Length: 276
Image (tube, rainbow, N blue to C red):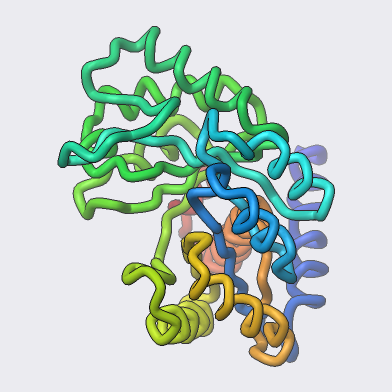
């Protein structure tokens, strides 16, 4: 019991210290993560993405010509690296190398994922490229998340290319750190006004719910907007963090709210866990 009490005290102190530096007057500071997808095919666009300011997360397509070199350089520049894994879509769009499909058995799917991970140095997690068909397949998502969970320390981000996705829910059932995309910055490519509007929406969502996650791509218009907006993030009151930091802060917030509600309710079950 004393050991459990000490662990609880350490958790409380860590949470209090964290929130003390995040906001003013005890209020946590809202935070966002931004993933730039589809990296690895274009060298110049990749270099321009690496040069963006702030704690961006860069997601590379497997087995692409520039993925290995750019991932290493991005890691050295302090960016977080992910694998952007192609998954079968609901139409006939080609996946490119390293994709997983609904006709794969479990062994083939696992081999494909392991080989794709090995092609992107320093990958801390995975998000899906396309996948409007495969992320609806419960069995394949179970196989995929079980394999991903066997690699210590990795996380999953559901790009949500379909409202019918079961990917995030399945990742959580396998005890993987997982979250989802809230905003697509450039759902119309090469339109700076769209990217500006979606950046505004991202910040508004973060202020409303405490956090939000966006995905964009290395289009010229997207990079131009991010070059301007990220340089001014300190003026917005919203902090840009990597995806791993984003997941950790969400977990701490869930623990903080759970402990706060438990302390206010003497009848709250002591063995209950915060929902995710």
